[in-house]
Image 1 (cartoon, rainbow, N blue to C red):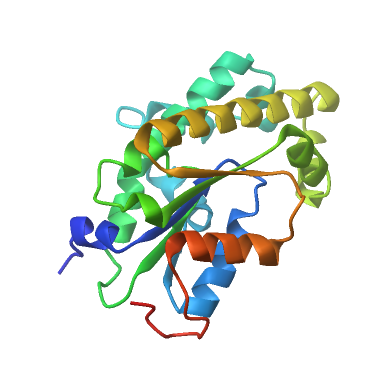
Image 2: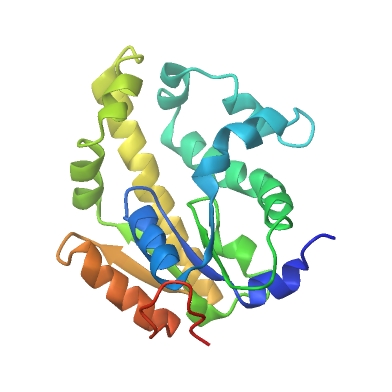
Length: 220
């Protein structure tokens, strides 16, 4: 029997936002400390791309067949529009995945594809969602520390321009996430590196109303 998505969202917690903001690190700690079920959107990237169809998910289908140079040489307006449309097309796949979870304990959702405009259509409590967006400086600094970034850029004819397009796309995406979150009544956090992961974990736990720091103990 499939999970009731309305009920699942009503007791879910969500960490959304833009890339390189520390979402995964916080989510992993939250799930470990509180024993949450954990759904990380990024873990399903390839599965979702393999399932997309040209007629129903045209942007996903297009990107599944593009090389890195072709992607990052596009105009910024196209990159941003495609990123948002990609998330909208993908949301149906995410919902199908969520139907496999049970309702015995809360679920923690994490990923950039969880746009505020999409999740607000479900009974997700505003106090149970936080959208994390890095400052431009923090984003660039930490992207450069990721070894797989260089592997992608090496496949581009102009790595410097490709990286600039990538960073600007993500900065614009972050601005749109903040706009959507504000419109939907969800909290946002600007990540600038001034506090460490442990402090961010404490702040988000407090925002979620979680006070029991014991694994597998339901905080309700």
